[in-house]
Image 1 (tube, rainbow, N blue to C red):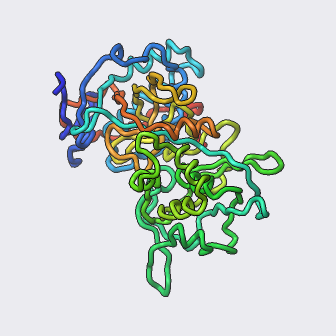
Image 2 (cartoon, rainbow, N blue to C red):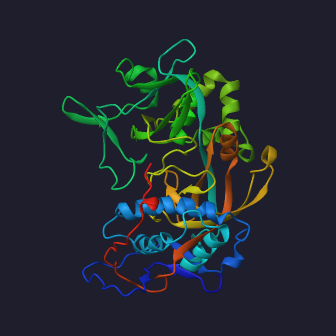
Image 3 (cartoon, rainbow, N blue to C red):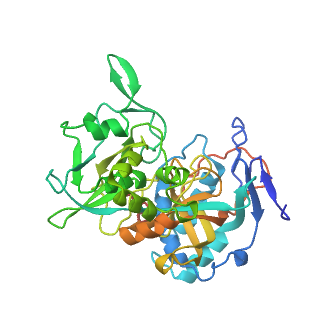
Length: 416
């Protein structure tokens, strides 16, 4: 066990002077996680990173943190403390220098190495926003539909902040009774056909399948306009990773598994590939994201456009959106998948049903084929450092504090 290791089966305390809410029970900070206090000088690549770029992403999150409640009530201590830090970020220049941004993070936060108690290393994957050619009308070339959320889809209660999550049951009503919603094979066989639900048509069924996995899509229309589609619900059926099926069937070696390997198999074996994709019964629905402009990334679960190379998806049951993390790893981000050192300050702004644990993250790499090629190769261990506001003391118990109401300038209240 490392020196100074703190096993957090307890809570943390805010050292500010506000009165405690006596009726609230203690809140666990990071369930089943180990924290080790470290220095910024121990983070590989910290000095060379683009702190100003990370600050842009953090300030966007601050707008949501100020305007929205936490996902739980009473709010978690990290959420409350981040509101205080966001109030300090409001006093920075609109475009601070990198040195000023670095000073801000070092002044307002303390880094802690974080890992699951039973696993010393964290785990990283990647995701991206696909871009494909398509049309608003069906044709011989574009015959694969992408659907908007059906009106008969019944989901559980929506989360308090952000769009619906790709998790939990979904139903439709038949003869007054709730039954599970159509699975992928049923939808592909026409369960939603001719109901006016098609939001776009594309060429390749594999592109539609990967759009369902990524949760967003850019469709380039014949006139050059780009239609931005974002996640808007799911069918409640279980998600089956088809890469695991290819490994289990001995069709692709585990060490060579990637998104490119899955695509290559599907293209080389069309019939088997179709059967393989249908094994994943999960299916998602889209909305047109009119609010996204230019190079905005897909909208994450915090309700903000994601920043390529700065936004990560985390376990929202453990972490608070807007929390900064420094992630260090050796990743295949170089030319032709060459391994390179990766050390970057990133902001938690999204989540996913497969993102589970205190040291688990999905890195958003941007849009298009190049981003997809990199994202599809990422299945690697990594070292996680969570940056906690200095008002938090992970070694002591606490009860939640009243919500502060700091004044936040309009420049920080950016919404997608």
